[in-house]
Length: 138
Image (cartoon, rainbow, N blue to C red; front, side, top):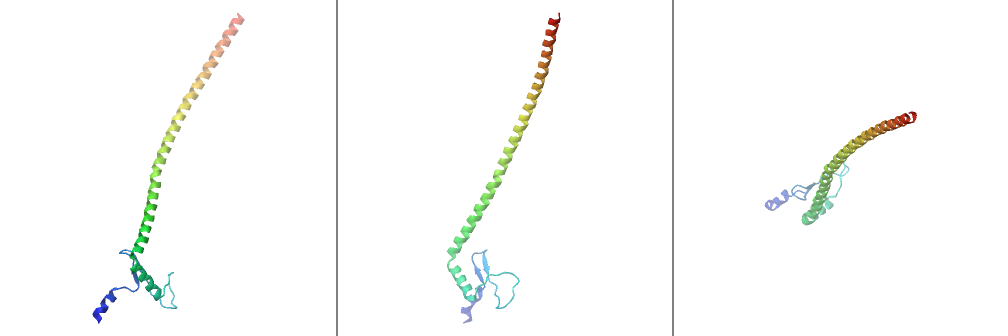
């Protein structure tokens, strides 16, 4: 008789194995006892119903785990896509800074030319004025 009861000793009454890495562990709590953290409570009957439904519907649990895995994979891909865009933005910023520097250099050259032309035209105007005064005075 004891020989037939040995498999029952290997089965955990307070633990539900979802997969090899995922387990739901039940913590038996006596009525009117105080607890140190928050728990979700099930009666013994409800826990047994939950365990039997999960054990018999492994495919449902696999579906839920696959969906959770897919959601995590998509989130990770979005993070990588966002991170991969940053070097492109940095490259655009570098190119724009270089373009700004070259534009400022060209502006300085044009300002120098403008100043040179201003002084040349002032000098030519003074020569023309002085030669006109010289011709009139003679």
